[in-house]
Length: 243
Ligand SMILES: Nc1ncnc2c1ncn2[C@@H]1O[C@H](COP(=O)(O)OP(=O)(O)OP(=O)(O)O)[C@@H](O)[C@H]1O
Ligand SMILES: [Mg+2]
Image 1: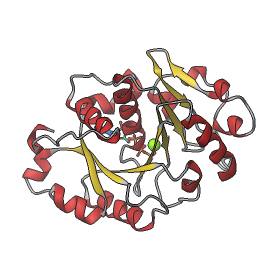
Image 2: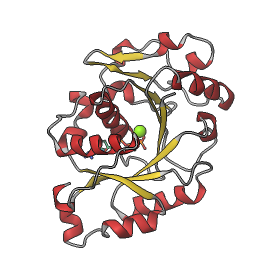
Image 3: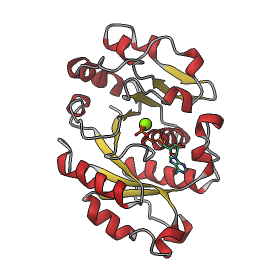
Image 4: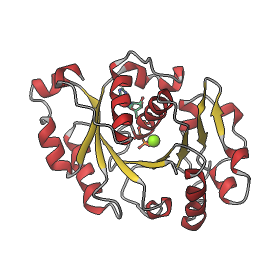
């Protein structure tokens, strides 16, 4: 049975989809097969981030309505260990019951399944992906994003204890200059336990153009550390200025 992850955030645009793709690349380096399920109905993006948009014929709503999983699953030509199921082009097509059945099935097919949810506090589909799902709330270091992460923490319906925080778009200079709160304060305010910090990074910003992340970049190394922690390995956080 593969591990099941789900990205969340209160505020939009904190990097859920980018981090999901980055984690997929990191897991694949560990030789794990990964399925990314784009849950952002009407606003799909994973196909573009990984450059398979021209191949897409079927999407999640088709699979939930009976199309074979293999027909609506697109593996990356540049990395066959990673596959995606694109989100429905139109909103309102995902039912909890059908999602539940799909989630159970794909967890037996892949080492890692990542559900990339839209931002906000609508948790109506969260229970459908199973009690084993580990939620990763992606937050930026700015006060609005941190407060919105706290709102997610207060109302996440399941697995609150296993849910973790990823601070994304981190820049040590902003902390050093006391423009943003320090890491401990961000963790305290959010209410989550931290699992990793991903730096502000051009490779990640350009993912929709390059469809890859340089493995020697600080961003990839940060994502790689998080993927190892998610697999149960103890990996220390580097010194803040080295992130
Ligand atoms: N660590 C990073 N460094 C630089 N740019 C980043 C980083 N993470 C994300 N971005 C950029 O931030 C923007 C938002 O990222 P993304 O689409 O992944 O966020 P999201 O949380 O999935 O958004 P939405 O709420 O719309 O689903 C994108 O332009 C992306 O390139
Ligand atoms: Mg997204």
